[in-house]
Picture 1 (cartoon, helix red, strand yellow):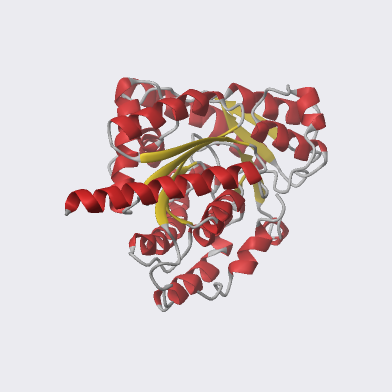
Picture 2 (cartoon, rainbow, N blue to C red):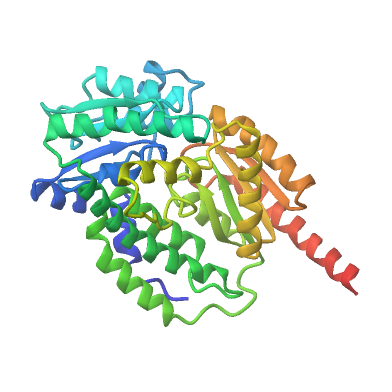
Length: 398
């Protein structure tokens, strides 16, 4: 297929943590709020006058300074983000809001704050205690934390309107993006998808790293282009997979998988579309904040939720995606030294193989994948295993 008309535009937006759209929004007087986790609801960081930027460190090289202030056995994403902050890469931020969800990421943000990596005079960092269970008692705590450690500091430090009406408007704006990403992503269900996994990852990632309203026109044009796009002839990819696991904030991993002969037709990872880009439904009876918190608490698929119900729900959710997108196998990945996905990946790999019958590839990968020869070899071997399974199933069907 020919490249999407705006693919290069979206790729350029992702080359650095700062991009032209961030500059445009700030020139309009809006404030940039950095965040690091799904557990801080995005609509609360996109109220009128502010916009959210998910922190990432594209094209990371050395992590020496990040390792010095943290540890060589800290998650590579945390070390890379701190390294970028020490280099001055996040000086444009007006605030960072981080959840008490991952100890390593918290240490990263604390170092960014205490080492004065962000130099704006009004810059502040706020830390939010988020629940590890999803029930009514924890929802009340979640709502209280959002009021005290997100909405209150945004209002007091930056003068942001945090009213119910403002939250509803932010949800409405996010839903516009989510509907576009969902409609584009649905084309991946086709037998001959009209969009590759790499292209979809680029489009989705941009919606986390840029002011969302400034992407709508280009996404609408891209959707219309895909509707009229002629898909590749059958046989240009060898197997369909879902990519599952910890954050993927660089589409190079998906590009590498597709260069080997896969097509990534579904995603369940941080910075992905499932569930990060699904529509949030609000009613008029309850206040918007409680509904938003309830949505994020119940939809979250992070392995830090350790109740039996949540663990089973995660595995059932992957199975649902697998069936819906007609996958042949799963790639379950984690960034090196990620605590939560360290055990989450191992357990999920066993359950998805033994209980649900999927072929899986379980990988522990560096933050910056590049053109990893080792990963390429493992993916190629995985494709062969998937093809052998297909042949066996065809024989049994006869």
